Figure (cartoon, rainbow, N blue to C red):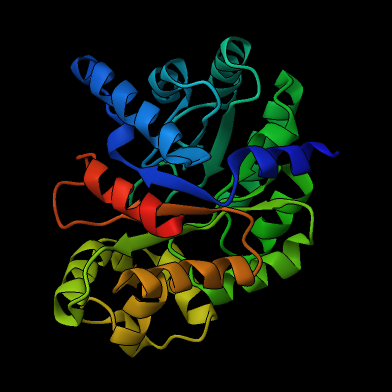
Length: 290
C-alpha cells in the first residue's frame, strides 16, 4: 500500500476544521485535550487547525489522543520561516510519528506585509523544507488555482483547499490525478430555516469576500461580481455552506466526495465566537454522518 493510500485510510472521510482548537492560552490546554479526545471517539479521522497555525498548536491534541491526525490549515509561509517550521515538524513527528501534517499556504496580501510573488515564495519554501528533510508526503498545500494545485500534486501529499465548491473539488481532482490527497474544507450550519441559515452564512462569509484570492477563485468557477456583493448571493452561499435538515446536509457533504474529495474538513458555523468549541454541534454532525 502506498504512503498516500495509508494517509487517506488513516484520516478517513471526515474531519473537523476549527480555529478554536488552535488556542494559545495555556489555561485552555485541558479543554482542548478533552475536546480532541471526544472528536477521536466520535469517529473523526483528523482535526485541522484554522488560522495561521503551527506545529506547537497540534501538541495538546496529539498528546490527548491515540490515532487522530492533526494538521495545520493553514500555516502561513510569511509567519514562520522554513527552517523553524522544519525543526518544529521534526520535534512533533518524533514524539507522535506520522500523526502531524504540515499544511502550508500563502495567505493574503491584506494579511501579510511581506506578501510578494506568492507562488515563487511557496516554491522556495518547499525547497527549503526539502533541504531540511521534511518529507513531501507529510505536507499539504492550501491550493486554489491550477498552478498551486499542480505544486500540491508534485511537491506535497496533496491539497487542502479552503472555501470552495464541489465544482472546484472536481476541477482540483482532475489536476491532482487520482493519488494525491484532496481534503477540501466545507462550512456546515445546523439550521433548517433558510433565512436564518443564510444570515449566519453571510455574517461568516463577509471577511472572505474582501480577500481577492477567494473572490478571484469564485470568478474562475463561474460566479459573477453580483454574486460577491451584499454578503454573497443565495447561489454562492448555498454552494459553499451545507445547511438544512440532516438529509440535506449529508447530501451536500456527499457531493464533495462524489466530486473527488477523499476527505472533507467540516467547519461548524454557529454565529458565536469563532474561538469557541461547538462540541454539541460536532456530536450532532457525527451522528448524521453515521
